[in-house]
Image 1: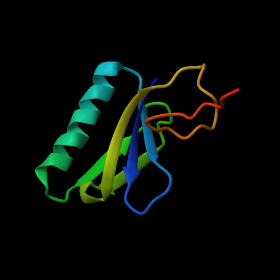
Image 2: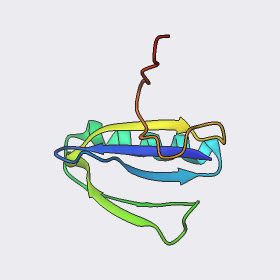
Image 3: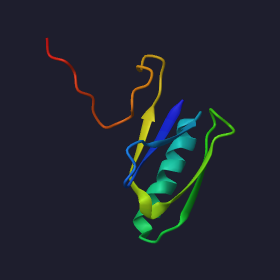
Image 4: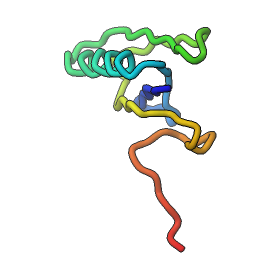
Length: 90
């Protein structure tokens, strides 16, 4: 399962949707990045392939980051997605 996470301005928690195929996830990532590059505010509607009832709509000018990541069984449950993880030094 591939996760696309959106970090929104003034919102501490990311919005997350999943795709089953890498190509589909990459296409959605590119769509979001292109709407950010356009500089105009537009409504982006997202659905989730893992939870089919999950739908979200967000204005593109409120997105501050988009993160594409592979979700697997070895990831710790409940971890917030991000760009890096801190490890305890022993």
